[in-house]
Length: 256
Image (cartoon, rainbow, N blue to C red; front, side, top):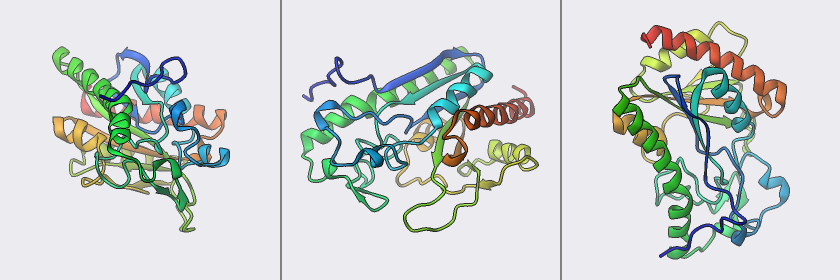
């Protein structure tokens, strides 16, 4: 049986803001933090790597804190680095506990045994997704309208050098209703908006939207914000204000 995270040294995997929230939007962030269990050290990476996009979604936690407060929306975020375990990946796929990320070797995730894999799953992955599941169950019991919003940030430049011109990506699966509304609201604004850019929903690998959204047949959307817009306080507050207005307009259009 895997031993639990050392709670004296290591944070809880689940960070919650506005624990109930009146808004129909439930915000979640799979890659909000960069914590690493103390027993794993630095995973063989430099301090610069652990502050970079390979380790976390830069700026998304602060941005979503502002957005959650402005909307009065419940926000559930995951505290550990995606390099320990990626909480938006199906268990067992190669990117769940990546050995290489954007060309950089993650030594501490190479050649790990079954017990270590199970420990990361039981300590981090399951508590985070159980928290989302419980929040959605409570909303269903209360008869509340819900739109699940998976909030992420992305880097302007990957190691391959291919340009990513978008400022905000609106990500959706086959159900386009909320995505179309949100794209319509944001299209006339100041930002370069992309549909399913720089990523779409990967139903072979992704977890949060396929399982909690499509799996429950509730409305769901992904938001990707370019990190150079939210790596500072003023940008975080501004993007939160823009998204608040857009989300409120969509809620009105949905009749919520």
